[in-house]
Amino acid sequence: MRAQFVLSEIGVGLRRNLTMTIAVIVSVALSLTLAGAGLLLRVQVNEMKDFWYDRVEVSIFLCGKSDHGPGCEGGEVSNEQREGFRAELSRMPLVEKTYYETKQEAFQHFKEQNKESPISGSVTADQLPESFRVKLKDPTKYQVVASAFQGRPGVQSVQDQRKILEPFFKLLKNAQWAALGVMVFMLLVAILLIVNTARVSAFSRRRETGIMRLVGASNLYIQLPFIMESAIAGLLGGLMATGLLSAGFYFGVKQGLGQQFSAFDLIGWGPVLMTLPWLIVFGAVMSAIASFFTLLKYLKV
Image (cartoon, rainbow, N blue to C red; front, side, top):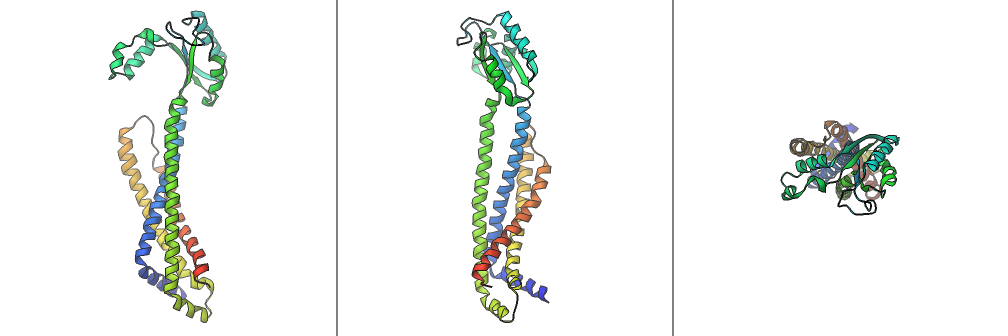
């Protein structure tokens, strides 16, 4: 009998505040969709870092005839210097693999990478530096190699390829924080709507709640229909968020980016399926808690 009464009160409350309930559902859905997108973007960035950092190398460019600088004052690198660098690299415990690239090989790579560029026809092999490409066991130990070779006679420069990727990862990280920022804003909007909806609902049924207090109904029994209304709205918002996030992932990532980019692997459905249940639970719990604290003030039970 009591359960039937609570269910009937929930139905009455949802019908009376239908437009505000819809606004709560939409707000919760949008905020949770952004939250899910931010979490998935974080997983993607971490996987891309692992992918690229495992492939980046340290490049030690050797001096050519026309190079100037602290290490090139003595002119082009000599055979003795080149073999000394090779031997020293082979003895360094943090070096996993070393590859020597000649000027001619550098020229071939340059032509392959700049087929459409007008300057490719004016560049010759002698203008490009020979180099050692060093793969480290731990890419974060770049400074050990840099301090060992930077500025030495015969070395033009030492370059860490991670620095080329850092602006890209910084952009992705900023996009992730922007998504989380918008998510927090939308969550605040959703909470305000939940608070307002609970307040209006409590005010519109103050006569019923007054009668319930007079007949000795418990606080929980009086509050339960209002809390359940908010929880149902949050639950529907969470379900809508799972649909939006799944559709966005399928059409935006799998069918969009996945068909255009092959340089790295995009995340699969695994992280998405792990995220979806949390959106539903968080939507319902957040709405119930916000409604509970609102009723403490406005229902005065």
